[in-house]
Length: 395
Image 1: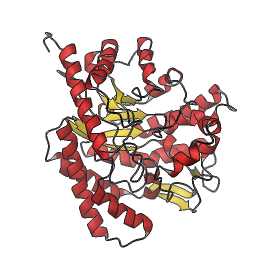
Image 2: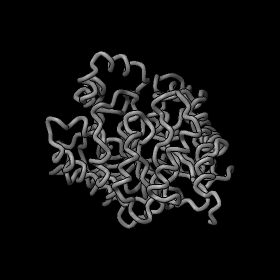
Image 3: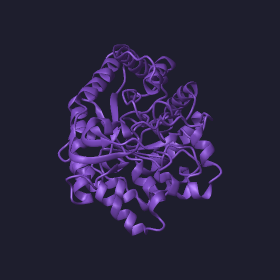
Image 4: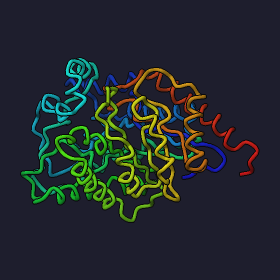
């Protein structure tokens, strides 16, 4: 899906849940009165509305806002897999984030920050694989596909996409009690299960987006004491497993997204993009969505002065960030897009966001109204860049 006569716009997927839908989600989370039929009705209406709002903001390739995921962007899949046993635990007390360089360097900041983010513990940790893995989420996935297609039927956009998780980002699952004898065998079993989601989304005529924040972020947990070589071996196994899950699927309908974690924190331990871009480009996808709009990673647009985007591929840089409630000026958006287009080709760069505006149902990174202002600025900036890149040139 390349540009032809203009810079197309999209985003990473997760959007802030609207108030009516959030109230139902909170009731279910908190054990209050909950009506499943009402939930399904409000979910469908909310998806149709959020698709329409994206189109009204000028976004070309739209999502369902990830509204069908009752837990955050990665943990949702744990409720769609058989062979797992949930053992409730205080996820954040035992979180691997406690060993990150960011948390070590800023110990006075993180407790206050984490308490403010509205993270939902249920289902996010304490999982153990105790049997052969299977996919059990056909009903939820079918519902999500039907809901976004209902929204797409009412708007004029280029395409719709659904984000789902990569094998590397299926985290918090132990496999010591599983039938799998090696880590590699377990990771490939996870990939085989995820392929069910991948195929169903593609078969529905939608774009498949694979989210993989854990691939870059794990560096911050491993190095040191592990070496870069050990981290890259960890990541290579998971890239290989992802390609195993994608074998034979149409690359032009597949997008691969990485970020360094959507939390708006210091990020001093992030692995440089130059050290992992070769791994990213190994993924058998047609488009790559990469953070490039926030203060920690904007400078990395320059890697494309030395790295060649493979033929036939599309780069979708973040030119809008979820890290701040400041709305990017359209001229800045245009500048970010134009300088990359001059490096990789105007047909090969689209406007995107760094990450989702809401990590899950209860962890919004920006206010809902600011989210829409940011997407409108993205569309306006893409228009400015289009006029510069296609000025006086026949297409």
